[in-house]
Amino acid sequence: MNSAIKRLQEQKEGSQPENVQEFRKDVRKSVMNTRGFATDIGVLAKNMTRLNVVSNLGAGDPVDFYKFRVTNKGEATLGQIGDEGVNVQLMNKYGLVVADSNKDAGDKYENFKKLMEGELTLDRGDYTLRIAREKGVDKNEAKNYAVQLSMGTYTKDFDTVAKQPRKGENPFQMSAGQQEMLSGLNAALQNMRSMPTGQSGTQKLLGSFNIFV
Image (tube, rainbow, N blue to C red; front, side, top):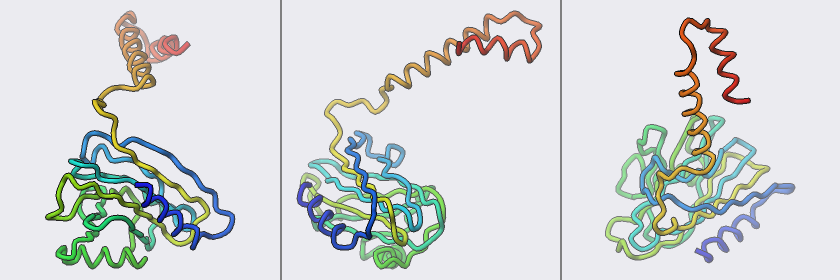
């Protein structure tokens, strides 16, 4: 993966406008290989942001998903570098494939070529990148990749380095903040159950404020 990061950095330095703010986050991919657990790589805003993601398909890791949001309708550009044998698909919010790097994908492959050339128009909304091995590639063969999304020029450059999930990680385990929120909701429910009957709407609302004091 380090080689993919280096190549992406070289590509960025060769074409980067002046006065660009750079941001980077290191994240862990989910152990769940589904679109619903896609890694968030940010917001693609026309003439404002560029999104970069660097990662790899580890041995036995079948697919990676990355989600992002497009804020303005416009022509998007996708850049891809890394090992051979990697398939990239762009999916809309309904999970339908919009563009596919598979040469046998017909119109979806034509859309992928347009996307690589900056000629594919994307509407506002949520999208997902699906990255997997091409058919026939050994599932235990690790594959490094880096993908870049832009829409016009940009002033903010966002890098996401997506690492493999921790062993034994439970995707359904709640964070401390989520646990605190759940406790607050349970307390609110108990408070409402303990309110005397016959209260007006205003009295119930005023009583509810005690939960948060």
